[in-house]
Image (cartoon, rainbow, N blue to C red):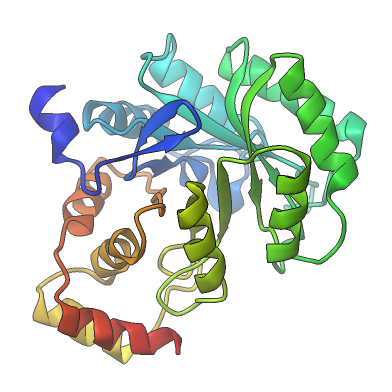
Length: 290
């Protein structure tokens, strides 16, 4: 470890009693096209996971719906028995249909089954952190999360889950969950251009709760921004590097989980996220989302 663990940008963050690198890895892209089926390059997928751990990454994000089961199986094959320092975060609340959709599955029985599936595919006795995915593919949707969240709290009390979080949640749902039981993270869409959660991020930072943005560069249709391109060109960096560096500097509670199926890209992302952005550059990038 030595040199490598300090080489990751951003240092560490505590998810409850779990210490993780702020620079993490999202496993979603290890599944096949459309996050369905196995990867074209099985050995390559295993190599990326092993490289992530070798680089000192201690936070891997996954879900049993990816594949389905594929990313969890790859994680287990590549990394089990898991190093004590490694924390695998999964999410429940959606399954896959034959059309490749993500229908909600948040009834108590759905959630119990999903926790059992994750325990089995990952090969663990307890899950480090489980995010309850709310809303739908269009984004967060208002409504009570009580029945679903209380089911996960019961499973936590049974010792099957260590920590709880939310994904794709509204600000009201975050507050509702916190009135029921502690959460250690919120995983929502947020990036340079999509700034809806600015106030929530600041509030969670004050409370010591992590915020995990997915789609740091806009997702399947990457951000087209002249300001982003200009700053990237000036710093001789990729737009992804700028997007990641900006997120790390935006707030200390932001944890990154960029995904890639390439070892080279993984290393590039680590280097890119280290870019120190000047106040001037931050002001320029800030205009993208306002």
